[in-house]
Amino acid sequence: MSETSASVIRRFRGRVMGLAVAGTALALTAPLPATAVTGQARAGAADPVSVLKYTAKERKGALAYWTPARIKAVGRSVDLGPTGPKAKPYRGTPLKTVGRLFFVNANGADTWCTATAVKSANKSAVMTAAHCVRRGSSPYNTSVDMVFVPGYSKGRMPYGTFAVRGAATPRAWVEDSTDDLAALTVDSDKKGRKLTDVVGGQDIAFNRAVGGTVSALGYPATSPQRGEELLRCVGTAKKEHGTQVIPCSLSGGASGGPWLAGFDTTTGKGVLISVNSALDSTAPTKMYGEIMGATAKKVYDRAQKS
Image (tube, rainbow, N blue to C red; front, side):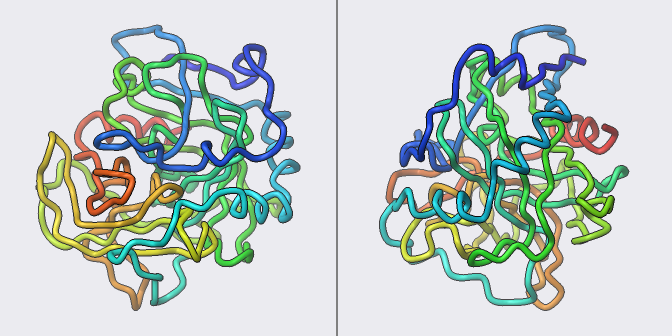
């Protein structure tokens, strides 16, 4: 297993002070990867999973760094234009499992993605996009000061903040910018409680046939929400470009948000089958997500056994 500590990465670059608009989630390419970030050295080519670790000191620093004032400021630092017509405010049972993932990206900019607590052996696994964790095909360009805030809504953080202690991605992302998904492992909260003991976890499925109705959720940096409110697209998944796609106008900041099959707004439960990865344009009408197969399962297993 190849592992890299974020403390090693810090020696290669300093943080850019202040907020950078360009840093905010969902970096657009064509299919445009959804937000942010990082890299790790090649090693152990036989291992399909690459792992980034954060030290106890770094995790403590991340929790101190993301104050309510900083969280409020990062949303105000960027406006990606009007929210598209296919993205609607989520209305239903409050989703404890879905939240904002705050971090400092490889450019040194404060930014965020979306992430989801899932059922796992260690009760501490969170799914998001690989580009939120590290920049593809660019070792040592990794995100730091990463925290997960489940159930975030308009400044409210009812379930607290969880520091990320480890991030697993496919090695294919590290080396070739393919297979854009990640599984994080988070610390317990200040009371010593495991993540899914606090908020529950969505079911997760692998090797599922593409198709059926999917709900994609995220916290885009579009107006008027600008990351403060969870938005949702609903559509039928189809295969395209070796991935799956649904009609959706979520944009930057929604990167890493869940694709939930069989989603019930009354219970807030579904089955996570992918995450927001890429857009079709800067005025999006489509959202792309990976088809989660054997490698995705290995990434998830690495996180849930950590």
